Each structure stands twice: as C-alpha cells, then as structure tokens.
Image 1 (cartoon, rainbow, N blue to C red):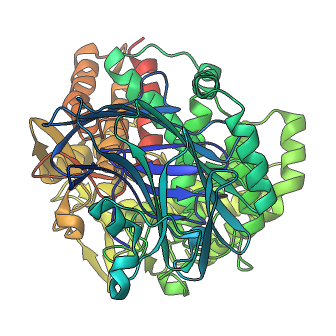
Image 2 (cartoon, rainbow, N blue to C red):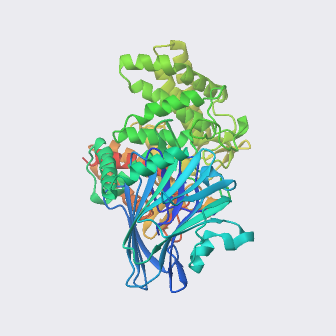
Image 3 (cartoon, one colour):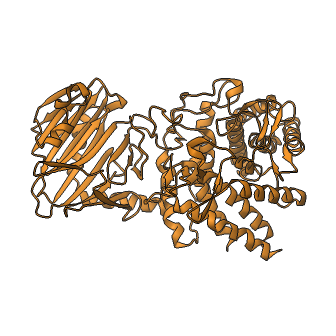
Length: 633
C-alpha cells in the first residue's frame, strides 16, 4: 500500500478517516483508531466524450477547509474545462457512517460521474466478498464480521464489482470507469474493487459509506441514516463538535491562532480512544513500514503529553482514563513496552530487550501518574493511592534498578535511534522519582526518602557528567562509555516537561539560558523566513527536517524564562517572549490547509512533512498557547 500523507482528518468515536487535499479518502478506521483500516483507494472520476479524468490529478485545482467547525470538511475542485465539484464530508457523531455530499456543476458538458472504492474490509486484501442488492440499492463488501455498504441518493444507474488484479485487469472496476462502461454484475469475491456511476448532469449526490459488524446491522443502519436529512446530520455534527470545544477553558489569543488551537484539540480527541483510554501517535500512513516503523500505535510518552494538554485545555477526563489503561498494561518488571495497540496488546516493536527498551517511556508514565496523585485533594488522593500505588511503586522500583550508578543503564533513546545513556531519559527518571517520592510521603517515609535521594543523585550526576562547559549545553548522552557531544534538542527535557532544572534557581537558570542559546545557534533552521529546530546535529531521518515538537519545546522553555523575568526585568521578559515569534510562525505556516500540525516541516518547501497530524505536536501547541495566554495577561 502506498504511503499517503493526509491533508485532513474527520471522525467520531467509531470512525477515523484521513483524506487528501483533493477529497480522496486515504484511510477509514473502524471500530478503533488503530484497526481495522478498510481502504486501499477511494477516488472520484469523470468521463466525458470518451475521456476519463481522475479528480486527484494535477488537472484539478483544490481548496480544502472546515466551513463550520472541525466536524465538517469541504473540498472545492475545479477543472479548466469549467467542470466543478464541491464535496462536503461529514461523519455524524452517533453513527459509523461517512456521508459525502457532492455538488456538481457540469458546465453543460455531458458525461458520467463515478465514485470508486478499493476496500480492504477488515484490513484484509484477499478473501473479501461483495454483492449489489438491487432491491435495496446498496453495494456491499464484507469479510468475516466486517461489513461496508455504499448507498446513494439518487441511486446510481450503473455499478461494477471488480477484481484488483494485474493479471485480470479487464475485470477491474477502475478499468470500467476509464473505458466509460461498468459491468452491472451482482457478485464478486477475492481482492475486490467497486464503482458506481451517475449522469454528469446530476446536480447533487449524497453518498453514505456505512460500517457494521453484521449484515442485519448494516441494513438497519442504512434505513436509519437515510431517513435523516443530510442537512440535519451536518447540523448535528457541527453542533456536537462546537459544543465540545465550548466545554474547554476560555482563553484570549490572537485570531490567527484560534483555528490551529481548536484543530489541535480536535486532533487529540480523534486520536484518543475514549473507551479504552489510549491514543495513537498519528493515523497510520506507512502501513508496510517502508520508510519508518509506523505511527498508528500508542506510545506512553506521546500520550502523557496529550492527556496533560487536554487537562490544561479544560478536558480533565482523559488523564484518569489513560492512567487506568497504564495500570492494565504495565509489564511484570514494572516497566512499559515501547508501544501498544490501543487495546493494550503489544505492538510490533524493536524494543524487546532490556538494552533496547526506552526507559524514558516508563519514567514519563510514572511521572504522570504520581504527579496526578499529588494534585488531588486528601480524600480523592487516598482513594487514588489505594488504587494505583502498587503500579506506581513497581514502576519506580524498576527505575531504581536501572539507575544504580547515578545515571541509567544503557537503553534506546527517545528518538529510537541510539543506544546509550541519555540526558532526556535521566531527566525523565529524576522527575518521576521525585514525584513518586512526594506521593509516598504518607505511605512510607523510608520509601519516599529513597526515591528523593535517587532523584537528587541522578540530577547531580547529570550536571557533573553530562554538562559540556565548552559547548554550554548538556550532551545528548554517553555512548560506548564516552560523552556523545552532538547537540540534541531533547536535552530541553531538563526544563520541560520534567523541570529538573528550575529557572528560579540562579545557577540552574544560567545553565538553562546557555543551553537554549546553544540549541538555537546549532539546531536552528530557517524555512521561508521562519525558524524551526532540528532534532539533533547530523540528523538523517527524512533529510533532517526541522520538527514541530522540538520547536515547541524550545518555545516552552523560552516562555518559562519569560515568566520568571516578568515583573522583575521587563526588558529581558519581552526579549524571551519575542524570541518565540518566528518559531510560532514556523509551526503555523508548516500546517496543512486545514490547520493540522505535522511532525516535521520540509526544509526546502516549507510544506508539512511525514506524520500528519502528530498528536505530540498538537499537544505541545495547546500547552504553548495556554502558556502564552498566561504570560501575556
């Protein structure tokens, strides 16, 4: 399956869909965000006077946006012939249904309009079956207990159930579209595709793509969804999303940031499985792991950032759900795995051994769990400790075992690239043990003291062994027993999110300032007049693009300093706030037209790059907006 990076996502609690900028559907996930992925291709085409035109080609100009809140997606397509197609995509909140409204201006040209699907129902390319039920005007494809139905108003007048086989290309529905004639067959099995035709003179078409677990459920959903007017479904969807946004905290921010902020909130909601309590890092786009290891899984590290961002924004329910999920997924030794399927089963991994695990993920989890417990009022805190202390203690003891010499034993870094001992990972462990120490005070004074002493020892060891005076920065880490002196943006972790160094302490503040200046000097990358931050020197992943995450890290640390200086040195305060301007421009200008924040920004074009949208980027953007809102009051 080809790598397809989306321009938009829409969904509800049951469906998650990704789309290209010309309205092509890349993926539809049902019933979870990580499984199953049911679409290989979903395209639109026009055939006029024997010539076919796929609407995702360069001949079509497109504009894609959210007209009334992020639950609705609008795509306007125009062709030099004068033909125009407007698509309104909606996934209503109550149903596993993707509704598409096509408005066609044929410019008085005769021909055919087609919708084409290459489904992989249940995530299975082979062994599918399909049929056309003429009595009910529905195309159906199924595999085991996975059903997909396509229904339209008005009904299509031609259809084809084809095969997606190079050796039998003449049986393909795609070929039928290109020659302008569909076969009208009733059944097919195997590696399938399907198409439906409408006269190009048709002004409006409503298409419903319906998902279900049984045939009976599919037909019941068809009856129910087609009995509701499309306008009502669109209104319900807009209202539901806008009501959810209104639940959040009110903040004052420039209008230019509002769309990005709301979209970032929507992204986290769509990536999060509210029933299971876990979140994918991004919608999967590299299904065969051609260029990376995939993104459609739950990393504790990313999810911790996401649930805290949602809490900051006024949605506190996500954090306790994730904590409950963490209790269920903890490994016997007290650690957590590299990544999981959303249901808590182990995902494909290159972190199966002690030396290849990522200790920072366990530390981030313990830090989040203990930190949350420390914020609760007395009665709720006691209940929380009764429920979760065993999990927290097992994780903390794992961290104690891995730090017997002041710094952690070798593991994989957070970028999943280097083996060694790292500043970021040590900062995460120190913060986790400090938070666990506070939570343990009422449980066991001796345990609390052990954890606090170890956290302090790790911090002292970091400063003594990992600080590079000549570079005025922390080293990335120690590899093969030697300081690895490249500058890595992840060392910002000593300030944010782990707060091992405190800006209010003079000598620590001086180190923070030197470190941030070094990172900005050596990792800064100008893109179209904006400044992004690369992950580390000599980064070769995806050509070494600047990342949104690292840029937002730097902004958060700069704003921490601005907050410290505010009221006591206003000139320095303004200087640190001003530093963030071109970084914010980099983050927002690198988004898609629908304001999705990517993992990276292409250093040559300024376009969004690689994982789109990335939950981690969205979470940090939310935190930065709230930080700016607080500081600028």
